[in-house]
Length: 286
Ligand code: ZN
Image (cartoon, rainbow, N blue to C red; front, side):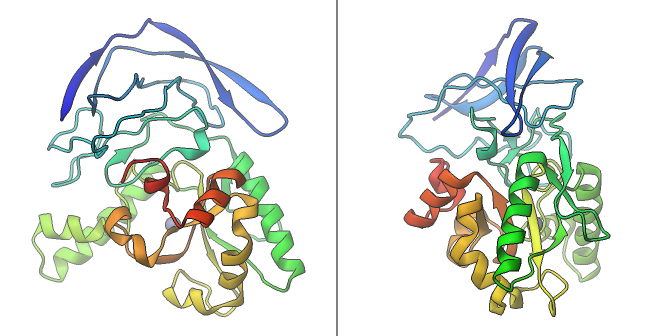
C-alpha cells in the first residue's frame, strides 16, 4: 500500500554532509516543497537542491522499519525523474544518514543536483579515472594492496555524469532498435545492462568498473582473472562489493557484471559479504 505524501519543508535547512575521513562539511541547502512517492510506513524523506558541491548530500532521514513491501510505486511520468523513457519511472532515492549506502537502480534515481566531490583514484594511469573522494582514497588503498599481491586492478570507468550516462543509454537503445526491437522493448533491454541517466552508481561517484591486464575491457571473462579472485577475497576490507552478482539478477535487474564494484564502506561491505546479501537486500529494499 503506497500513499502520495505532500511534504512541505521549511525553506532553509542546514544539513550536514559527510566528507572525507579528515573533514566534515556543512552545506546549506534551500529546499522547496516536493511530492514523494513512498511506502505508507516510511519516514520523512526530503528532496534537496544545492548550489554547492558536497562530497555527498546527507538528508536527514529516519530509517524505515516497515515490514510491507518497499518497492517504490512505479508509474509513468514519475514527477521527480527528469528523463522520459517508456517503462522507466524511478522515484527519488532516499539519501541515508550514511550517504555511501545510497541505493540507486532502475527504481530509484539520484537527487537531481547530486554532485559528489571527485578525486582521481590512481594518478599513475593517463585516463585519470575519478570517484567520489573517499571512495577514490579507498580504491587507491585497495589498488596498492592488490598490486603488492601481484594483481593490477586497472580503473576502467569510474565517475560518469548523467549526460554521459544518457548518451551511453540512448546509444544502446538505438542499437536495440536497429536490431528490430520496438522502442519500448529496446529501452527495457538496454536498462538490463546500462542504467538510465540519473539511476547509475557511476553518477554518484561510488562505482568503479575494474579490468585487468589481458582483459582491458568490461567482460564477463574478468571473473577468471587473478584480479577478480583478489577482489572477491579482499575488496570488502576496503569497502567495496561486487554489485551485480549472478545470483541476484532478479533483484538488481542488471545482468551479471563481475567488473562493477561499488563502494559502501568497510562495515557494510563486510556484513554483506558475510550474509551473501546484495545492496537492495541489505537495505531492506528487495
Ligand atoms: Zn559499472
